[in-house]
Length: 415
Image (cartoon, rainbow, N blue to C red):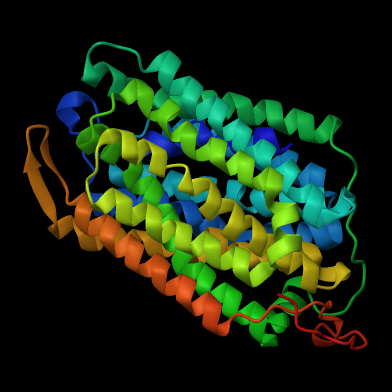
């Protein structure tokens, strides 16, 4: 399940910015950095805002999670096919909005479905989630290396939309797998009380949850902006041929697999606050290295910090939410947290990226964004987030049933 979930998006997302920003003379769409940010940031994030209804309510009350996954991926497949033929900003943006509404809820659903069937979640879930990263590696690296091998740059740019069509076919296969192979995961809440997502929002009264969500917003925004810029940065500044962009980015995903595999023991040894802070600090270090314009070898090596950043912040945050939320609202709790990770944060990447439209450089390849300004800004935001975690985040050991309307349990500090 995890392999297919992230293979669908990994097929096209890491290097779609190369296609969107490339000039029409070389078969790109000629979008500005701001327009690219709106497409891959805001449009790709809208689904997180509708996810509490589409995923949270469906999975908590009405429909088996595996059936919801199948239906949503069928819709996503149709939209990917349509967008592969879009040539101007408005239709591309609108179709991506609709795709986001269908696809983004499935990310929270897969996490909730997996956590529903796992014991010893802190140990098992990261090792399940790492297969999503492996799926991303296989499709993103495989497509660029196999398909984008033309001698002519324009030919390779023109072939990038094929990735969306291939992802659509994969999404249909995933829908069949979800429907016929995944274990039945029926709704867990049949009460007539407040909606689970409303109950989950109530848990923001717990300081540790509120602080984590507030810090997750800028981290998610710069994480999205990383994907908006890393493909053009590698090809236009570092000088890596387009066919090797996917395999080069696999360095980042391979380190992600390693840290996901070891995350459980690391959490038991160092605690949530330390691991979350390490994740934010790794983001800052990676972007600072990019901003220094080092040799290509060092840029490639620094991509391995992506694994530290993703596993130690994003996956650890998901596990913390699972740790403190009561069982009857866990589907919706993960979905509400998904609003931040996949919605509010990435949505900020649109207007945030548009700020950099005024900062450009003239090179032999033409006018390109001022990546040095982008990466230094990213590094500063990540460093501030790491400091905020150290100062304000104080994790809790017990579940927060008392904030969701159940009998109170004792809540003890946990680090």
